[in-house]
Length: 269
Ligand SMILES: Nc1ncnc2c1ncn2[C@@H]1O[C@H](COP(=O)(O)OP(=O)(O)O)[C@@H](O)[C@H]1O
Ligand SMILES: [Mg+2]
Image (cartoon, rainbow, N blue to C red; front, side, top):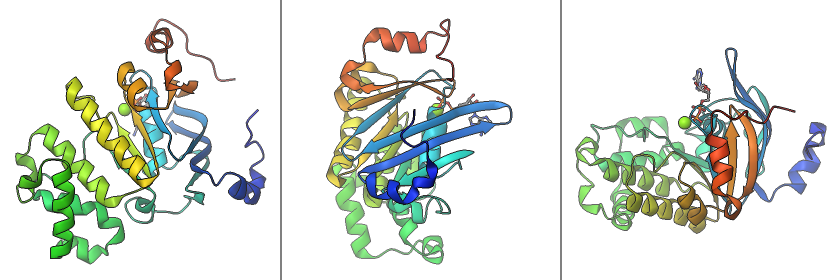
């Protein structure tokens, strides 16, 4: 039985579970007649790095979007850094806690790199300021320092569309570094990368989470990368949790069964 069965225990919960940076209880999402995510409890402590695995359509992106506040869940409660997320707006109040790199990166191609990186601070900027894209020399310097760490300082004034795919991914990471949220989410961050670059991107993301004392949650499929970069792995199938185990226990057979579409998923109990 879930330890969170009694949701009237909210006050007690806040005190007892404040060590969880992510604390979701009974989160679910239905699209029309399709249950994308069946009620899911997910609690993640500082320092954890969680991999979400499962075949296409198993609900990985939906869960990340719910955690990022981009999709309101149909049921359940979500606390980020012990605060209820009810009524908090993504891109504004929520951006203090949580940052998401989506598969499509969400960069504005025609803008120079510097402005896309500074968009990581939009949550802390006023709307007018973000529209006119004013930024100070100090802000430019902080972008430059961040881009230097990622090896693309020379691209700061280039239109973002002129960068390679791998460089654009770094711009998205630079934006996240400036935002500096404790909860870092990444949807298939390495799906289009060769093995060496995949390893490097995961190193950057986990390094960022470690520097901030936060957590990282990412969807991906490669078992060797999961064992190397993640502490925990959550398996999903048709929106239903299949396992939640330490990453060193991720045996090939476990993953094969999860991805084997001929096998029946574990039914919802
Ligand atoms: N906005 C949406 N409208 C309708 N169905 C959706 C929407 N987003 C996702 N789905 C469906 O929800 C299920 C889970 O999708 P998703 O979370 O994207 O899975 P994954 O990321 O694991 O591939 C899929 O069947 C998908 O088609
Ligand atoms: Mg997805």
